[in-house]
Structures are given as structure tokens and as C-alpha cells.
Image (cartoon, rainbow, N blue to C red; front, side, top):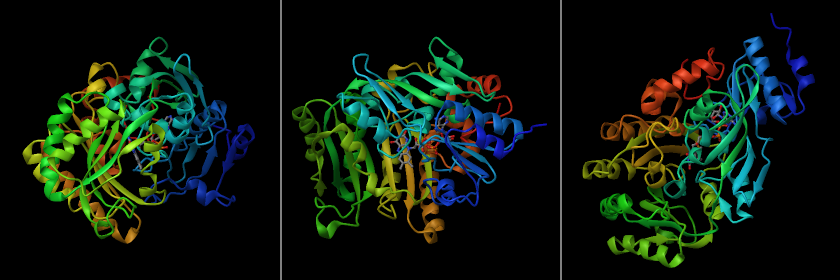
Length: 456
Ligand SMILES: Cc1cc2nc3c(=O)[nH]c(=O)nc-3n(C[C@H](O)[C@H](O)[C@H](O)COP(=O)(O)OP(=O)(O)OC[C@H]3O[C@@H](n4cnc5c(N)ncnc54)[C@H](O)[C@@H]3O)c2cc1C
């Protein structure tokens, strides 16, 4: 019988323990997706790995549900739960760069904005997400897709080691040489295996990039998408952009009379010379004249923050995901039908190419289970007004139901919703059986189950 209470836990914690009735509880309990409205028993703002270990032990000993939160971007809201104890890592966000070794150590609650700011000061970067407020924690553990995936692999492919608090409350190192089975599982298996208090990443020289968004008429969409599909098969690895469906926001480069209309967009990131990037993008302009574009040379970190304003904290979120081999004419027709109905400026559909360096890694070398896919497609429903929940959720569901038969039968776990647990085996793909074995070894009681859950 445990003698632990929240009061005894409070005495062990260097950070803060926020419980119902405390000032700031409402802010502390809230995650990024405001469709999620939960009341945890306590939110622990962990200051260090020792705090994390105390929370893990408390949850295990008292049988309290445990939620772990990094950047809090989980669409299903895995970073909170009713009556749970939340290990909130957001204060653990220091980033230390070793420029000569081209590595960076980052706290488990760091966001990509914080990470990129620290590494860009040295002209270095690694693959991260396309929005700066997303956490490195959840994103890397699920795989990690972004502008540099084709050049340098997934975020998890750039992970050198991790400090992990496991379900027994112990802290271990996971790397190729220490606890290699755990290290394998962390690279695509999500938050199933423990709490990563510190990540060490490999960095690459990336400073200025050439890129930005282009908006094409919907009538030009099929030609642009089919050109992209051929182009990306052999595109140089410096190219890391993606096609999208997007309503034009009220920005200076968008003609005023076209603001609010849906377009097929192309968001490009070219990490080679601006001259070569210009030639690459001219290929798209030769297919169709963009209605609007904002393409140029900018720091890589700036592109990562360029779309933050479209997705502020506090929207309603419902997403679906599919891994796809080829954008066939049939698939393009379905995307045109559903994508052109994108209902609101915050919602979007991204078709991220994950070939190039991502395919250099053997399919069973890490837990990420869909190395054979060319695209990770996400239908990201995001909108401000809860009154639209039914209609906008339905848009996502109908879209996904239409394209799912043409997908590889699974989607990227980081783009999945709470009602996708029945698809978990397909989402983890080829490596699911081995993931279950590692789960049985490291978390036999499934303490870490608020995630795309791998049952032991
Ligand atoms: C606006 C937006 C943009 C996005 N863009 C991209 C993108 O470009 N590329 C991409 O790949 N994904 C993207 N995603 C998806 C993103 O990868 C997932 O939402 C991811 O889970 C977010 O991680 P987080 O740490 O912010 O979230 P959290 O909600 O804090 O955590 C998500 C999950 O990871 C676990 N977790 C988080 N940190 C840790 C840790 N340190 N140790 C152990 N477990 C942890 C949590 O327990 C939870 O299960 C985006 C999501 C949003 C909302």
C-alpha cells in the first residue's frame, strides 16, 4: 500500500505542483487542442529528470493515471486526462549545442522554435516540424517529418541518444550501444516506453534556404499534383517541400480579391543555392502560373515559424493520416474533390514526401514502420469555433474515407486522432510485433498508455 500523497510528492518536487483550486490551474490543465477539456488531479511542472522520476514513481505506486506532456500538440490531447497526474516537461527546454561535434542536447519539453533558435546560431539544424510551437518530444518519438526529411532523414533518424525515465522510475541512457532495444523503440514508437528527459541530436549545416508558399488555381491542381508526383521521385535531396490544400490568408502577397478562396499550394524549402532553387521552382511555374507566391531566401528557422499564426493555441483539432506510395490520377481526383472543400483558413491538407534520406534507413533499423511510403498525408482539421465541430470533423472523416482505400493501410501516428486506436497496428506497420516485445520488457503494466498505445 502506497503512503504517497500529493502533499508528499509536492515536497519532493523542485518544480511546481498545480492542483484544482491553485492559481493557474485552468491554464495548466489545458493542452493546445481546445476540443480537449480535462481536469487532472495535478499538473507537475517538472524542473529536471529527478522531478520526472518522482512523478512516474508516484503514478506507479498510487495507481494514478499518468499523462506526459512535452509541447502539448498531441491532437488527441494525450498530455492530459481527468484525475491524472501530468508530467509537464515544458520548463525542461534548455538546448546545448556542440558546434564542432555538430550535436545538440535538448530538454524533453523543448519546442522546435527553441531548438532551431539555438542551433541556427551556429548555422546548424536537424529535421524538425513545420510549426515552431510543436514539441521535439512527441514529434521525434513518433518519427518526425519536416522540410529536411528528404535531405537528412526523419527527426528520429538524427537521434544519437536519449535519457529516459522508465516505468520503474529509473533513469537510463538509450543509444546504439546502451539499451539498444529501447533506443530502437523510441525512434517511431511514440511515448510508449518512458519519459525522455533529454534528447541528443545530430546536426547538419543548414543556414539560408530558398522557399516559401505558392498558390495555384484549383483548376491547375491536377497538373501541379501530377507534376509534383513525378518530380519528387528523383528530386534532389535539397528539396523538402510539400503540396497542400489551403485557403489563402489575408497576407500582403495575396491579391485582395482572392483572400479566403481555396487553392492548391506548394510550400517549398530548398537547402541548396538560391539559383538552383529558382530553377527547380520554375518547373512548377512552367506547369501553371501561381495566383500568389511568397518565395525567396530566408533563414531556415524563419520558414519553420512562417505558418505559426495560422495555427494558434486554442483551436479545435481533428486529424486523419494515411501513408501513400504514389499519387495516382485516381488519388489526385479524390484529393481535388475533397481538398477543394477545405472549410476554413486554419485547416489544411499536407502531402509530405518522405523518400530521399528517409529511405536510406532500413525498414527495421528503427521502429518507424512505413519507410516504403513516398508520402505521409495529413488531413488536418483545425478551426476556432466549437459550433463547427460536427461539420468540420465530418469533412476530415469523409476525405479520409475516400483516400484510405488508395493508401498503404496505415497513417503516421503523430497525425492520428483519439478514435484511431483500432488502426494502431496498421499505423505502426511492419515493426508492430517487435514494438510489443519491447513494450513488455520496459512497461509491462502499460503505465505509459496515453499515446497511440502499444499494448504489452
Ligand atoms: C500545429 C501542429 C503542427 C504539426 N506539425 C508536424 C510536423 O511538421 N511534423 C511532424 O512530424 N508532426 C507534426 N505535428 C504532429 C506532432 O508530431 C504531434 O502532435 C506530436 O505528438 C507533438 O509532440 P508534442 O511534444 O508537442 O506533444 P505532447 O502533446 O506534449 O505529446 C504528444 C505525445 O508524446 C508524448 N511525449 C511528449 N514528449 C515526450 C517526452 N519527452 N518523453 C516521452 N513522451 C513524450 C506524450 O506523452 C504524448 O503521448 C504537428 C502537430 C500540430 C498540432
